[in-house]
Image (cartoon, rainbow, N blue to C red):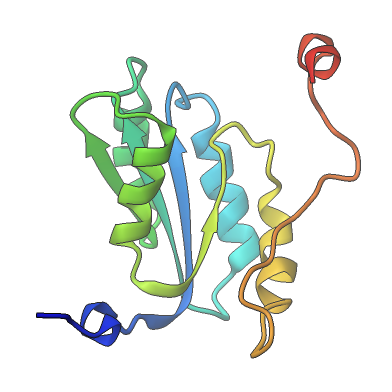
Length: 145
């Protein structure tokens, strides 16, 4: 029996889900949450989902503190390291809003640009991505790219 694709579609609420896979991010995710909260404000519905991917540092402890501090922060703790892509998919599956933004946990993506990217979406545009004006990588990564 063939099933219609519509049978698998879930209607999501209007808003923005920001998904961040976390591995050894305890030192950066506090600032990331603060900057996301400031950038997103209270004018639109949004959530910030941290998916801790079996990180050996204090990332999960930090996420728990952020969940207590920010009502729009959600934490998912994977019991072992499954890899960035699987952590990202876990966050996407947990998202409750119709627009999903993905970011790294190391602040290489500026949270302040989320609003402009989301605002670029319309009836004719389904996908928006940012390209940095100036790459901020170390000499080793830049020379090996």
